[in-house]
Length: 286
Picture (cartoon, rainbow, N blue to C red):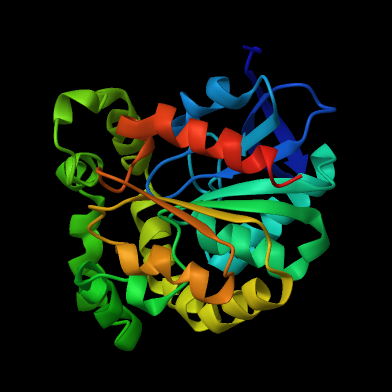
């Protein structure tokens, strides 16, 4: 097990915090987290894989320990998140790498893959969606905001930012919630409570429609390039449904799909199983 380094990279004046472990000459693996978390969600996965891979796990802009500039200085869209992370990989010298994408990390990572398919060696998607059939009815309040971006519809989404909702995201669909450490959701709630963080997250809720618009572009990339692909899915996820995982096989016939009896934050309960699946998959995807 290698030590984890905690660093910041200056990305054109934007400070991106990241975790790094493993030998720099080993195959590179970029871990991209989701809402409302940060790179700390990989706290158990990193040591489980760092003997074999050079692992880098950045906090997305506005999340965790990365910069969260005011909304008048930074546009909180998924396009901008992807631009910063793309430059981040260049600044720290990642040339070719596999990506692990979860939740918000999926549209961020898929944008990178579309722009630079030559850089992507493999994709692991853990509840990271790219198909409309993968979106549950839980998205309906956010869809309403897409269709009518009124202040009333924006305010209706604030319940998604409540501390009890964060805890629910971690525990829903988990058969034994005593396996879920309170550390993860407590830290997420700390970050969500920072001044201005609520408006940043509401902006991203509104912009998530841009990801759905790009689903056909992502799917064209999958069909044309057929990257080695593994979906590891918490089958009880209230937001991203199992049909979204199965759909990857439509565009990548060789895609592997594994379901686990857990919820959205599958690493909280099934880190060892997911790490084992990744080690096997990535060893065959060089």
